[in-house]
Length: 472
Ligand code: ARG
Figure 1 (cartoon, rainbow, N blue to C red):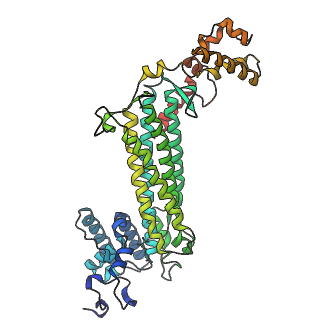
Figure 2: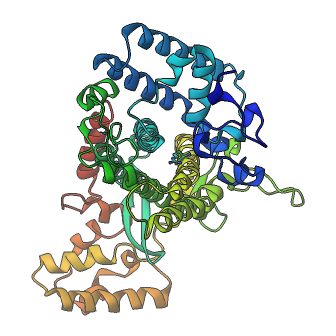
Figure 3: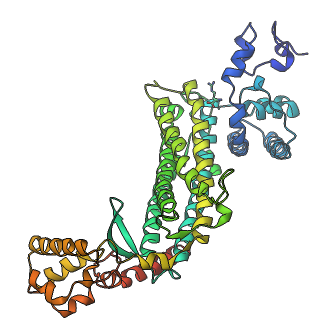
């Protein structure tokens, strides 16, 4: 046994730490358990290996490894990846994290060649690189899932085109809208989420390798090459900043929280709409569960949990914000705590997006229930007010006249269109027989004109716009 491999007092051979040179005492077992991250950072194995191969390739380019050494390292790293994927890789808290696990297995296989991999590198720039690579893939996956959900909404639009629904403000009936106008409202929200992710991706997609621990390295590395091999679009300029930066993790956690918030509002709406009280929707039974005591129940549990799990996603963002408060430059071990919240937000939101797409595609509108109650709530009152404005009645005056007409309709428990024309005329002489062309929910929708409104031609144009956008 070579002298530097002699275990210290109290340490087993297996316990020997990669950083153990200066230590004369063994690590307390409780410390190992407290400081390990292997239990959750093992999911970074692929990105760790990709990062290490690129790093080794660069080391060979600049002569810090021979071409043969690089070939061996690459071959063994790829084989270790296979071993991990086959489930034959042994994890131990004695080896702290995924970086140590892979490196020590490489060294077990290659001896001194394996020991050269960590040249001009620290786990600080390594873990940052792994996280950036992971985030980049996560963003791409989220974009695919968001596009899938958008397609599910757009996919409903033609079939539901003629369905007029109540639009709500304050959860009170406000103005009538076309069903596809609802669907496209969510498509817009998820589009902003995609844009935010794409923007975040630029700040994720930057090279950390070469920062080493915090000051860079005196070895002749080529960071341009590392960036090229890993497909990074920029190179971190300041090693202190790189070593400490977790902005990109927080940013992605925020983007995930915003997606969860969008999903939660939609879920809440559909929970209400599928209730007996609304009766607008029939949810697919495959996405509902029953009650252990009430035989009749078909509960919208998936929607409730999409709403409920928003709590942890928002909580994870809070965790990350507090985690990084007051940290001085550069790397601090606190930063190891960035992984679980981010991974959890990603897992939660990905699952929710996938289920949401299924729900959106398979839910049926109860057209008759929606139609038969559409004349409740005086959804056409604003339409009548605008009719008067077109006849030169000042807006405030028109508002007052229609308010009094609605009051009359309320007293009679009837829609506005049920008030006889002659009686309406006593409220305002500008009202003529053509008023019945804009009264009633369907007429009020047809009367709409403005860009972005629920006017049928506007909605039609938007459906076509999104069909084209989402083909890409
Ligand atoms: N497990 C660590 C993390 O996730 C790796 C970096 C450790 N660096 C160090 N100097 N101890 O942050």
